[in-house]
Image (cartoon, rainbow, N blue to C red):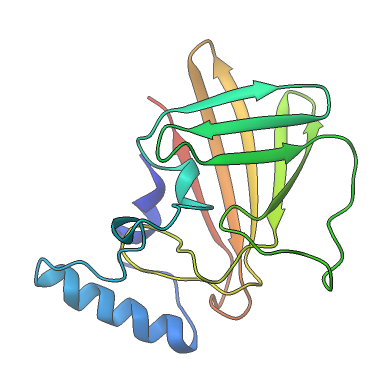
Length: 171
């Protein structure tokens, strides 16, 4: 199973405004065998949430105050802060492709909340975009040695009519 399970429908999630138009254009391009808004192919960072759901390996280095994730794709680095900090105030945030991620432990599940994303990134590799209001919650749970499950909820009131939820299961 994987990230594109929400795109493998129908039914597809409902998008708003420009995102609805982009979804139709993306589907038409796919039928023609063409790329649509191929940000990664144009050498932009994969960014969140794409970086977490592709085939590239990720090295995770856990320290008491942060988890550093280094992607095998373009050596992209993502930091998940575990030091109890609050998000950067809206008027001070510098938006990036990976956003600002703050994590906490709930038992043996790592819960990560990410905001502060630039609207220049994508939700997937087919050209579906998002706004700067995208919020991504990830719940990492290690099932056993070598297997981790990831439950993701994406909320973007400017783009989605409802949250998008999916589970990535490593088999």
